[in-house]
Length: 254
Length: 351
Image (cartoon, rainbow over all chains, first blue to last red; front, top):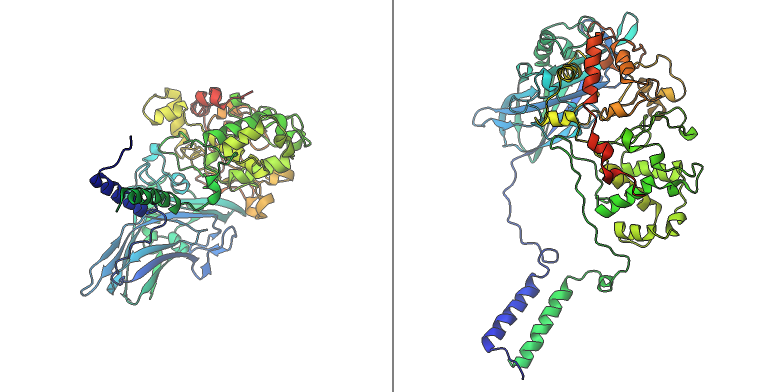
């Protein structure tokens, strides 16, 4: 007995066959769909963070720096978070906020994309050294090795170190360790830098310069011999917080 | 269209569909060396970081099982100066994959590090001279330490089939040996101690353990800066003040970097299962946890490269714990023992 497909079924099967041919390679072999033309981006902007000690660049492990009090010191570790960046709009330009956070390690390049920034006139920037309260909670950040090593212990309140700035200073004739650790919500460092700039062209770069000597001065003189470890001291951390508010400068380059 | 023509078109259509995506003609012939591998997912807490697993060496059940067998098999050393030894000769499961007395001249006075949670490490050995991946470490272990002649595996009655299952190839190479062992090392995860259960609110600490926990994670004991949660190591290097003069292997990380500030610095060992891994320090100078705590309390020595974190408020280098505090700290350290890790038959010798 010979079996035949009815005409209508045959047409359906043929149609399916054709669809199969069309779809079989769709994931790998098909031409990509035509992309929609995108409107020109306002201004692609990067954030670069650099470090200096007054006129000197940051070089690790060498006792070569002097702070305002006269402590002769080196840097062995520098890690911190930046967050809450706001480009303050002027005239008709609105504020442009970027939450971050950005983990900064003094041994890393520390260049980040900020996406696109609306072109316009800005009167300055605001930025926080540390983490906002919503993120300053144990395990709030992704558990990268960097973040877990910045953890502020649960018995001390949880969250994260805002900053670890460590090194040696000469004390009574020998290198002695110091650790400027900053944490806790009340010590979030809020920096306001009023300095007008104009965002134009296709791309721009915002460079933040962190002068580490400002950690030890302005408004308070900080003597490492009188406070070489800050973490267990609310009063020392408050001094560091206030000093750090003036530790950053920035430059915008189109 | 006649039915016959339509049927031909139909068949042709299916054939075209099947052939259209075929990129490698060799796949049409069955590869006798091919194998179906089963992905293996590591079991660890959500608060652990993501482990470091290279894209070209994903964990598989077959790869880990092969690595396990190689770890316990003295065949690895059969062609080298350490003939008769396997990894497990110096890494006993009951001691969290380390050993109280290595007794191996090749490693001198170096204390044996635990094979625990190395999936998260980027620095290996006390001075960090191996890495940054476990595959790099295994290259050293297989080719330099054990000096394996890969032919002994090729000529073995069972290993060729195990390699085929693990990697889908009939060719055994040194890199594949190293990949299998790296997979096994990543499988050696420890995350089920009393402290872990405490963190998950599944078990309470005793009063002594609780006080020790408070000491460990505050400035009073200041252990946490280097032995950070959850791995109980920062994977970094520190000179903790064991010595003030550095000779031989005592130079530590300096031997790798040449940086004077790395003089006497060694990798931070994990404290997980620390109660099982005596002796302590890179040279095994301390036999008990009590001796270790005594050292941290008041035995550190000054040197120019002493880690800044070892200098305490007031610029001294002693903590000055009371006998009760020392006992509490030791009690807490015992909560880091993972009984499952040291008894799990899946981690034991397959022989």
